[in-house]
Length: 248
Length: 310
Picture 1: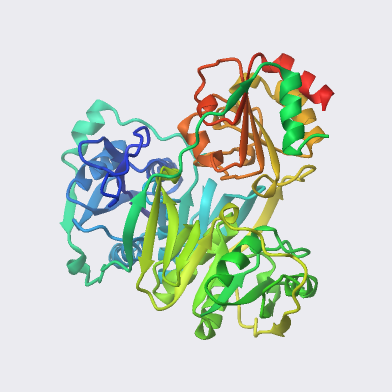
Picture 2: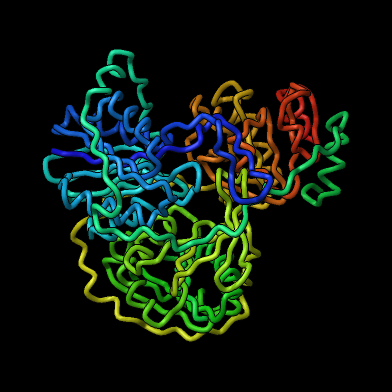
């Protein structure tokens, strides 16, 4: 059984994003970039399914040439080979989903596991779009995955609790935070990953038009909150709550 | 512009999140609602009373009992032949369905909008709300999810829309089936629609303390109960309590952060609250930099005292 895991290179989640002074976006020059945390969970889940009949894991990234580093991380974690579709221009989720569809048609995976969203643009779209384009089932926000030979049962995190769905294969899964704890790649595996196969492609190779549909007119910082007052004791707090109308 | 709003409901009543979407849609033009489900008459009747709605379209089919994207999306796509924009709340169901609709329509979705600037221009948060982007679309049809806390709720009463049955037939489920769900029974208001939220953090130190300290205060105030990621990860409360970047985004009238230090990831989920109240024993905790009212001290003394004095 083959699993495809798309991964994205994003600003490291520990770095505080800084909006550029000219309002064109977030400053990504000379800052630490890493694999999108939800994608790390996707890679980890694919590796864990190797005990359950998965024989090959193909990692895919679409983006600038430096996304190679992200793919090498996936290979060091345990993916078997990688495909990089190089585009120095930003590709939107719709374009990414179309490219992934072409890759799915060529690779014929049984399962595609993606992060539920990338922590840069927070779109939360690609997995659902890919499922729509392929006409296959989608289980988003997964917190538990049980794989059998011809189906997958997924527990999903939904508002107020959880929901379970059964999907026939091939199927799309998007990961939520609590699906697993991704492993760190060991040094020997990082070394080994350097010799694993990594194919380089372009959107044109797949005949996919990835022209953006959205134009970002400006990016600004959100309104700042300022610190208010400190009260001395509970009585003062009660008085404040009364003034706010939340206590009688 | 003619808009179609997906109505979130539980088979009995319209969920609150829908009302904010109606407000967003009405800024674009005429508003039609889609009530899809199995046995939807009561929900459709309720939806028809929402102020500012032209028509309520119903799709009644056993296959629609649970809102799976695989069945709802083709239905929406069919109805989009007569509509220019599709809007859904940015809830777990809305986020599951809308992108599938967008892909089938060959449209780039605009996720989690905060405002409608014009018929093709919207603002939305990126980087967990650390930046706000203004985006303009060139697509002919629009697919949008709406952040509920960013828009006023439309009045639930006062409208008199006509209810029109659409063809909900032919929705065979093949690729996926609903197996079951475990939805916590809420004895308190739901986090994302609550007016007051009382949240607890790691300083509570145990599940027992969380229940014995936080919950009585919440009940006294008629508030929802939330938690920081640290409290969830420590197992004090289930994960659907989590407020933050990767949990629920909330913006109540009053948010009380108790024993929560104020990590960036938590602030991202609650900083749009109208009034933030922080109780923490560390006077240098980052939460005090965003709190309107702060009280430094031992929560195990302060909170019971506060509860008894309210």
